[in-house]
Image 1 (cartoon, rainbow over the protein chains, first blue to last red):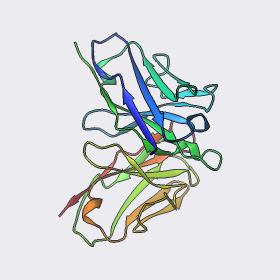
Image 2: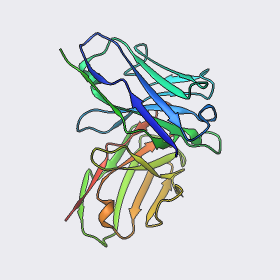
Image 3: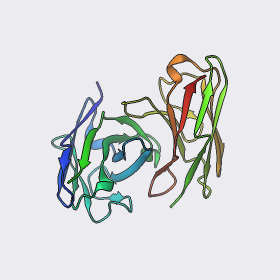
Image 4: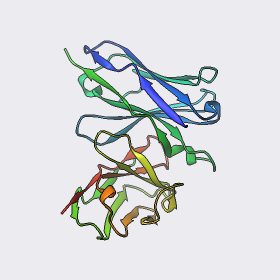
Length: 123
Length: 107
């Protein structure tokens, strides 16, 4: 079945780095736009990053631009989020999500989500 | 950035009730709006996109409406499994932004 599985979360000190992974299965990964979305404890959803089919286009939230990098390897059906210079404000559950297929720009909606991986930034 | 404002932030209702949530965008987004449901400890699920289009497999009691800056999300007859938090999301331009959420609680 269609599935996204995130990994790589954990506890990290402020200023350090972490790389999250998202393994896709059950669909043709290379034909889908992908996103990262996060949710701080007890808070709402915050979109983090977008990557195009081949990885040539990337967009970021202002809060992470310059510190986080989204990437993908279509041969491995895997999405990543490299997070550098982490702060306590980055403490969240991080979800990878698939963009909706179909009409142009529908991929800004997210129809399949992973279960998330928790990142805690604390000294 | 486009700000998305949901109201109310919470609502108490009974099974069978009609519940309506509103979402207002800080500027026109045409019909570039989605609604998601999230249950505690779970990932969000897409219910409606393009303001009115029901995602495959989603019950027809979920109804989306609106365009421009003002949108509504209605549950026509609340079911026990509908108690959750609902979020709107604009898809008009980057950065993509979500509303603050509306928690639908049992009365």
